[in-house]
Length: 508
Image (cartoon, rainbow, N blue to C red; front, side):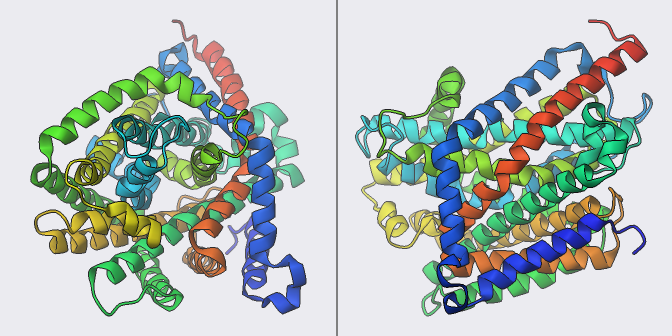
């Protein structure tokens, strides 16, 4: 336990107070209960600072693209003769599983079908051909280059300073070029690392909540006699917590590695079955045309706000929430990606992190969302009624009941959600352990155990307090202070690259 820092103790106390606050009955806290207070904070941030999230996320993407083409792309994340620890396929599987697993399964059919019925543009008629085009384009947008640029920037900062400068693998260490090492060893560094841990806890809790909702919703929707209650959700959280804690104890090269590869196999099995059992030509035509419109309209979507439509909350409910969610996930995913990316050049790293998951994610949405929209647009099926009556968590299962071997595919879907759930939680215990033990690559088991319990408890409290809405609220609040830290990281990285360029004589 000698490696544990004061960030660990401060973070555990704050997280425990949050959980206790959520458990206390409303009669004890009056008007200051958890759900009401967090909803008020989230509303204020979304109304007043939605533009800030939008500009920040787009700025991170621009910076990442600049680094690909800059002379600094030649720099290696490690010593000049270091080689990558993992082959490409394993590397992609690990970063993808940690980065978006549960979310893709949750929203793969749910988001496009929701946009199809409630288009992003007020002038677009619901369920029209134009609504179908916009629905898929914005699904690509929300899960494409922007989120992976956010992850890439943070992961790049951590990997560069950890493997090339031998700095501790914590976020405050990546800000040394801006503030100096002495200042960051004091309260400022503790505050920065605490904010990162806080964002990680609630960013991951949001995803674990999504996973729980979908497993419970899938069981209830697919099997008669099972009711989707909070008790069922709590049982799922407890069962999965035991599984991911068991996996976390085996270390990075066993539990997480094998689970990540299992995730990819199950995901590909489900996706390719649906692709070929469903409307194959429609899906691929939809994918191709939408990818083109996504690239064409990327600048417009990146800066789209609706200042003249005050009652239109679409951007806040979707785009702002997503950018906040990705930013709150960035300490977790960024730390994990950095850990498995030693030995790659900056150019190779950013291209891999940006392009491969973006293209795979676009294909995923085309298959799942495209099948759902095809069933409604051409097949006369009504999937959206289930979504509106029950929630987005049943969109996948509602869609699967209209395809061959639907029950079998639903069971595979439940297995996939479960393995993604375990992988994300497993990875997060490792990352939180790193962040609270001064960047140790092998955090003590007791530290990972504590964080596993806290993550599960936070997810349970958020579900109890308000389900999906409470999960989204937590993500938006946690992301706000960390966005500022990420902006500072960009300046710190650029300054470090300039100094490194002069030192090693990098030329164009």
